[in-house]
Image 1 (cartoon, rainbow, N blue to C red):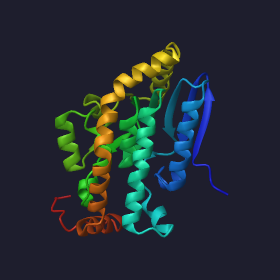
Image 2 (cartoon, rainbow, N blue to C red):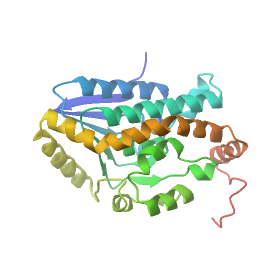
Image 3 (cartoon, rainbow, N blue to C red):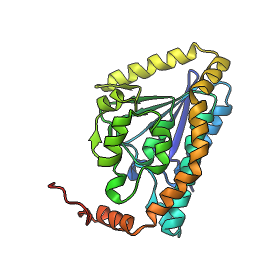
Length: 264
């Protein structure tokens, strides 16, 4: 029997879709991705739903791809990377092209593919437990796939710093350079902000919402479709490299990568 890793609850015209796989930090396993795609498709086709709230259980919003799960199914590292890239393409595009607003509420760690979900959302709210870090460069990789939805939102200086250094940044910083719509310092404030956003959406007509969303996503979708395959190929090539193998080995063993000359 397949575990339920994505839960959906509809209340007052809002579908709350919850990533509920805290044991693996809500990583994008094949099962979770399939259930998330199904939840988004159902919400998109449900006339009683006006918007989708995508949130999570546990201390991590989403840790990105689930390489261990893919390898456990007998895939090679190259096959696992290709599958993960296709999964990210599908999920991000589904979020952007659905005719209803998608609101991400992240109150935990956002890493790797979690940024793809955040960047593909129309509105993003960060709670006090959120942290952000684009650590791919430290592993011999790059945030290839997620860059398509992040670069149009981040300031050039922010992307330059955090894509390159892998430093952790705060919700307040994320708000200051456009990654999230609002950063809140208290859990009660997150609830109040979400309530306010949803009330605004409930006042809008379905046609008005769909047409307005097309305006805000048209350029991003066009750019996404131009770049997705190239970025997927780039990601696969990086994952297959010797440096990436060394980086992942160091990461999994909690040791320093051979190129790490930092003082810490």
